[in-house]
Image (tube, rainbow, N blue to C red; front, top):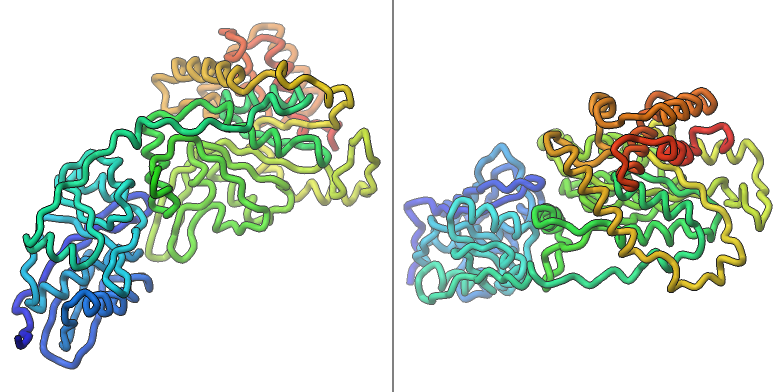
Length: 516
């Protein structure tokens, strides 16, 4: 049969991701007589421009004919940059409809999917937030079958999974009928495997364990300092075992982030445990804060509602560390580009670990340090003062005593016991800040510190003496009050006591001349 070009432009509705936000994209395909050529317009990323080659091969290998005419494809709105490979399927369907090869119902559904050269559909990033958007607008949603589990997290009765271009054509032309994808409640209700790392595995280091408990209770950023082998990394990797569980809203928020990043497990897509991210010290600042060619979330966003652990902190580049300052303070990161501005959440607990000197043995009881004072100072100066100011708790670790190595691990305090105290302290904070826009003691501003950090007389005297003796800065003063409030919550005190302040002062070792 002789092919005739369509007299009207075919229109297909798809979805794109701008950060974590989903927006509708109208794919217009026009086929006209002229020299064979395919033109794609609409402020497109190279990954979208390359779709014309995938579409051409997939149409031919699916038993259809690719038109030998001039084809113009427009992705609207033209003022938003389109990224991703999810536009392959709507473009292919538009070409087939515009060239009058098939009659398709394209107006009632959002269609996404990446095509292989043989016409099969591959998994696409961002299906979970796209499915939520389709549900909100009460429209059908057609997506690759490889993303089935991810879509089943959304209770939407108008979602259909397809495995190939041919199946999509048969579905939209009415040649076949498919049941909508059913919501899978088991994906939400099934329990995650418990953390195998436990604080009872740690021998000694009682001061550090207590400091980490305080840090997690009030979401205070923490820095571990000590010689090699004292257990800095071992302690940090056990932090998730004492973190309270995620609520359902937090699960959905984290799942959206990992869906857009393409990191979801195909079989168990819902994120049920708090993230623990530990990037290598060679990581660039873009990999930490996000951005790059595709403007994807960085490690700080992937650690949202969880922990960002930077081991060997001074070995990170100065640019990477300084890029963390604003996100640590604000809980969000804004990535600005010439044609795009994105905002990602990054409310995480920062945990860092470092040696006290280049050789690592300054202050060690087992081995003498060979570093000069200049080398030590130069090494420590890699961590800037403004960054240290954003770390509430400094924990010094020392070599474990020999008798601690023979401690009976069954008698050591387990993570579940510490976690119960942490959850109790967090409930107190939730009740305290019920009318505020914050959730943790670490988030209090100056006005809230005055309101909620009430000191008794003895506590006030001790804090005044500590500030005069150690010459603490104004910001360190606020940090001590916030940490004292968390310690008081753990002890069940309405007012901050002298013991609470004394313990909080011990966690500011980097502000004391003794450490230098």
